[in-house]
Length: 385
Image (cartoon, rainbow, N blue to C red; front, side):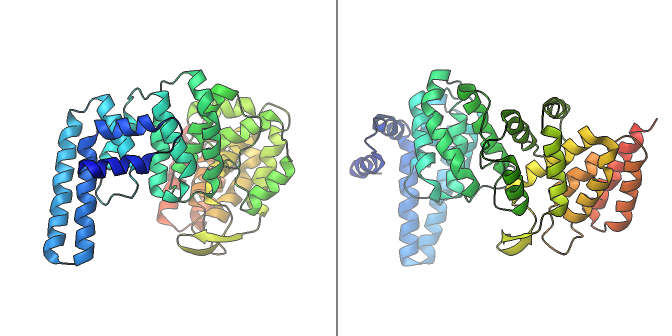
């Protein structure tokens, strides 16, 4: 990249927010990467313009050279170089065609000693650039990594930006899989260091886009009791079908407070009674029971029922499995919830739960879910005296 092009890039990155020196410093320190980004952009633009095979061959060769050099440099990059390179990737005005994910993965996994100003640059970008989709999600992950090691006063200054990003998560696109639970969880954990335990229920925990969540929010009211908020946030942290022992202990402790057991019963009953909602799933309009961002909370609800209600919850949990499994044809299945309910049944003592699992084995035909039921039966057998 020529010096005049570099000056032009710095002008594009200017925001006049007192942090432009951080952006320009990153560009200067990672000049080698900026040169690669510029070469890749020029080669791709030329190939797109001419559509000649030779130009495309040169474009692919350029990308291969860039990848090889980036890999070599990352092997010996110190923390300052790696953080500057990561900043350049997310600040670059366009989406690069070449794969620079290795830089971002290393930057999110290593404790780089980010400064408060670098963290502020990342969070300002995350708070104002949600239209980038998957690239925005990468920026949020990098911004979360930049918080490691910051002191409480520095976190307090960044708190408004974290709240702004957290509020956009329920409507943001590009967030896939477990990130739907992990990203808001991570933000709330940092905000709790500044504000203490949350007293209001964030939209990202109980997303009011399906009837189950809407009914629960109506029952909770505008200002639910703080300990109920803590319980619901904890239930929503269950990102697998089998919770850890620590998760179960916390759930039992929170369930001892006023109104928590009633919430658990209402939430479980809602999974059996709520009507489907039409929304986009897997590229087309589907009839679904839950917004997929509420799956983790629903898993937490079925496990809370197993832990607090015991054998009296068996009938309801069996019905939840049948309503959310792949063998339901009335609406789109919710296999994460079904799997959690199956494993929750496997932990309930007494003869009722194994009998329910045996009945499910005769009614469920999906191979993957049958394996889960068999595993739950084995767990139940291990509990038997």
